[in-house]
Image 1 (tube, rainbow, N blue to C red):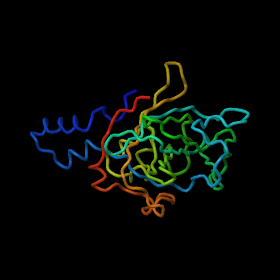
Image 2: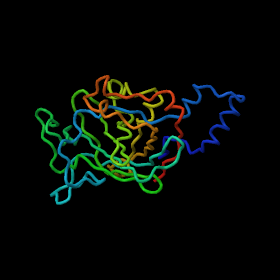
Image 3: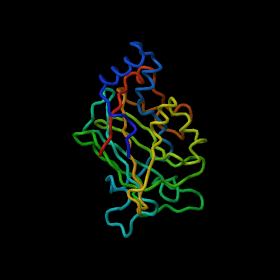
Image 4: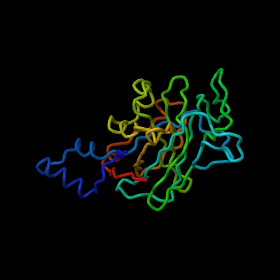
Length: 251
């Protein structure tokens, strides 16, 4: 599967823009080429009691009697800074709904549903020397008012640098999801909608790639929480857009 971010260096990118624009780089062209991963609401269901098992494989709980229900799904890529440099030693957290649309949160169980006791619900991983990360989880279940999505947070030394969400291309609910529609520019929204395909011809498991491109500004904790209202969504400013560099995400 091809990564979203085109494998070019910053110098090669700027040189190609100069050649194709006659030496003139407009702010629109710059913004189109350079796309930071947009911020999104933390939502109301960040775990209020994290599980003992917090590794990057959410499909199997240590000591569990069975694997989690749902379609096993893997994704990963690289964490990059605004200059395209891989970021090692950063912690990436993942939390999501189980196959029944329920979260590991005291208020995260949908009416008439039960939480899957075999699903970990929350996991994390530290990026390696190449900035790489990977999660093995399930395709999230739907819950009322949202499309299918994963919640992601990037931390550096316990400081939250980015909270965002990842989506699956082709899901009908994407077009009317208010959180997704409010995430930055159109180009930024496209950067968090990924294609997932079967791991092999006969496999039921899905796999996708996703590079996360991090700006330089930590998050404001007071604007991170909440169910997705205007105060809990952060948009990148013009300078953030200009600071972005994209790169490949092989893993």
